[in-house]
Image (tube, rainbow, N blue to C red):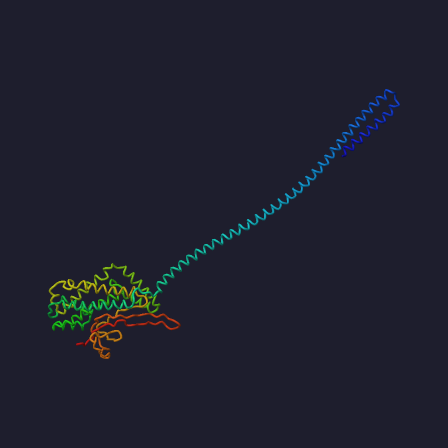
Length: 426
């Protein structure tokens, strides 16, 4: 715009100069007038050219103004867009920074959660291990606390009654099998056997057997054999294992007695069952009765010799040849009773009743074999001494737990009375 104004001023100045020149030339000669006319025309043409140039420049100026306004509008838009972009960038930057802060926070939270999860997993593993341990302990405790029996009391009673019947029949068969009886045998070679028999069944019954042998009365011999087999059967059914030494057996017996007295029935009985089961694993099965069978056969033969059985005296191994299988059956039955009452019964404890020779008769747990079917008055038997036991008895013990302040107590019941022969019978 300033350039155009300047050009206009220049053109006006030129025109004024040309006009002044014309006026001076008019005063000049005619020749100068024509030259001046030409100059005027040239100046006018130049002016027109300048006007046209001015108009063109003005148009260009307007175009430039339009372009300028357009540029300014575009610039404003660009600036607005720039501002918006910068605001957006700032917003995005802020959002990114916030996001980074949030990421850091979440990362820390995730790390904390990871540590807590690790602790939780560790605690879970510990709880699972504790649960498994307690479950195993509970199963073990349940195994100790359960009172489930593998057999019933009636089954045990039938086993003892069957064994008594077998002992009675075997004693009768042994006596009846002897064809020839003579006077009681004596001699140094029988001294050890004689002392052993005295220890097992007592001196009184041995005295009666030897006296009866001279008279040919076999009932006392049968009674002596029956007493011997009952003592062995009682020993087998009552011991923890035939292979144990007496001291070992006594330790186990005292330990079980203490448990029975001071612990619940299920605990002492479960201990008894486990102990018996594992003690049996320490020995070969055949060892449970092989040596006992040999001793029984030897002692049966000793009784028959002391009673004057000539068949036994003159035939080596007479008892084993004829009766080993039946004696072995007695042994097997006695051991089966021992297994049942030590391993298969938990709700109670069973004990074999086998009174020793010379002990006092007690009608609560014994029955006089000479009184069977005769209804002898109780006062006629009580207090008398026992000659020998002829049948095993069975006693049931149960430890009742303490309840509601009532002290624990032991309940006893005689299931089978032991049959005994009393001294002084005729």
